[in-house]
Amino acid sequence: MARTSNASRQTRLLLQELCTQPQAWRYGYELTKLTGIGSGTLYPSLARLADQGLLEAEWRSSPQAGRPARHAYRLTAAGLQFAQAQPTTVAIARRAGASEAMA
Amino acid sequence: MKALTEVIFDFAAKVAPGERADWVSAMRTELEFSPPVERLRFASGCVGAALVWRFWTPKGVENAAQGLLVAVSATLAMVATLLTLVAGLEGDRLVMAIPAVAWGLGAFTAARWGLRGMMTFAISGTALSGALLLAWAAGSLQPSLLVRALALEAVVILAAFVCLTVFARILATRMERSA
Image 1: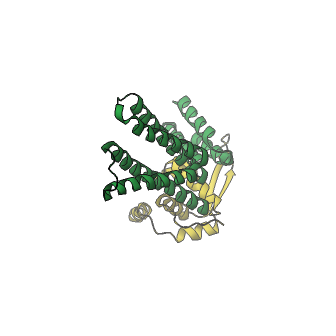
Image 2: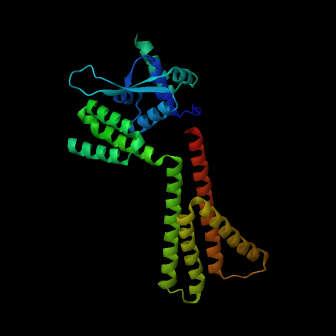
Image 3: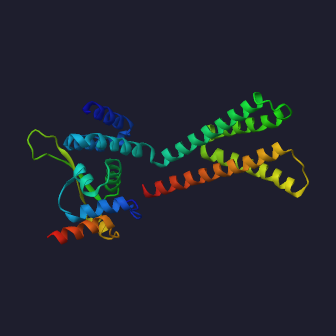
């Protein structure tokens, strides 16, 4: 596996978002909305994580009839371990705090 | 607006390297799933992603640095040539012709032999110009003000070339290691 140290702040943000529901398949557009990361940064990060074996990516058929299959992502076991080893990114921590306050 | 989004996305698809075709398809699908008001922004981001995939590679970084060095050297050669021919530096034409030839040689070296060639050229040029300035400072040579100015300018520019070359090489090496 390639070297995986030195995740950028935005990659950490993405990893932390993927960590919140590790079993769920996530989509690109959804991730741009949840993390605030633009598509220009998100997709190279996703591709790099997939290249490093930290992310599973597969085409999944859309539940809505007549809609095309979507490329979906979730962390691998190694990805989850790597994500949990990363320092918490403030934006996610802040949002998590806000969610807890609302609950 | 839809047409513009498609034009932008098609450009992204053209720019992206072939090995990322699956990711380009993924972005195209997500574009369809994004709300119409956000599609232009999303598609513009896809161009950014495609550019990253195309150029943010060890080879891409080296090519970009090489291109920049060739362009700057060629521009300096043209400026020096124009100054030699047009600016009426009658007594100093020969002096001005030297940097014109030297920068031209630098542009050729960078184009022909890449960063390695430019490194050799820049270090040699810095050493020569630096030696001239040191000789002047030590009092063993009395070059004209123009020669001194050109030597000083050469040292600064060539040192910047060396820094850029080293930076591009380090960046490319790190990218190779993390790939």
